[in-house]
Amino acid sequence: MSVSFNIPPRRILVRGTNWLGDAVMTTPALLRLREKFSDAHIALLTHAKLAALWQQHPAINETISFSAGESVFSIAKKVRAGKFDLALVLPNSPRAALEIFLAGIPQRIGYARPWRNFLLTQVVPPRVGAVKMHKRTAGEIQSLIADEQSGKRKAESGNSTAHQIHEYLHLTAALGANPEPLAPQLAVTPGEIAAAKNKFALEKINGPVFGLNPGAEYGPAKRWPLEKFITAAKEIQQRTHCFWVVLGGKGDAELATRIAGEIQQPASRSQHLNLAGQTSLRELMALLKICRVVLTNDTGPMHVAAALGTPVVVPFGSTSPELTGPGLPGDARHRLLKSDAPCAPCFLRECPIDFRCMNGLGVERVVAAVLELNATR
Image (cartoon, rainbow, N blue to C red; front, side, top):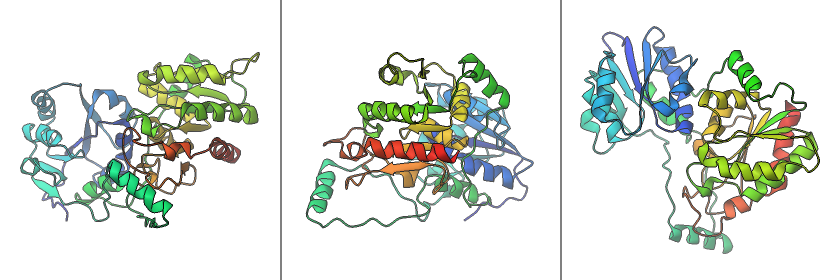
């Protein structure tokens, strides 16, 4: 199913997603949209916290930002001023569709979802091959563990088009764009990289710069244990003489401070820099670009690093690399590590049992993955 046009749209609005990782995963679809409508003016409606992400991006001409708590009427007023003739709604929420409806854009395309279809002029049916992120109940988790213990566990079949980037590509394909996947892509300038090196005194660092991103905003079930991060970081530092840049948001500051204090070797020069909660989004992007390798949980900066071309090593527990892994699925530049816990992925914020998915990922496996990527660069 595709939308037909008597006249190709000249001014297109894309209602973007609200989370950093999700936003990065929309970039293949935006690039395909730009490819299809090369002469159109494409604007992105985005939360203010993500507006800087889109600077220098080749798919976007303009960003229109809104703040947390801003009303749908205020947002619609901003959009209406742009006189757009087509809107593509990437989020599945009724509110996102309502913002576009109130803006009076004549063509409004998005996925068919409850409580919002009447707000769209074209609803796109669910994609064949789409996989929902089902949160397992405690009962389901116990049943899966019992099946494994009794030898009844069934092997799960893979799905080559399960990844979230295909969801966004399917929407742009409804407008006639190419549905074939591209790697997520972001851009930083040489000037931004030089400014970050200067501001954070990284020009004089001898040896490789590695990134360490130990937080995860979604919840503790996505975080590899703190003690394992510390042990791995120490081992990698001894083996590579790297300089660690510890990264994260303001909510990760306490965690990052604990890690930074532990990885500093006694009676030696400083071998790390703790910048958690101290960078702008553009500075974070520049720092991730500078890094040779990034050891990270499954979180927004993981996606940003991969989209900038920096290899990542990621312990996966409650979430699925097949659905939301970094970069293009199957990208050999990255190492996505999973345990054999039968209940993973559960997609829960907190583990209801013994956190076996993350505890089962040993330090030696993570260290080996980082060393392997370092050797290839």
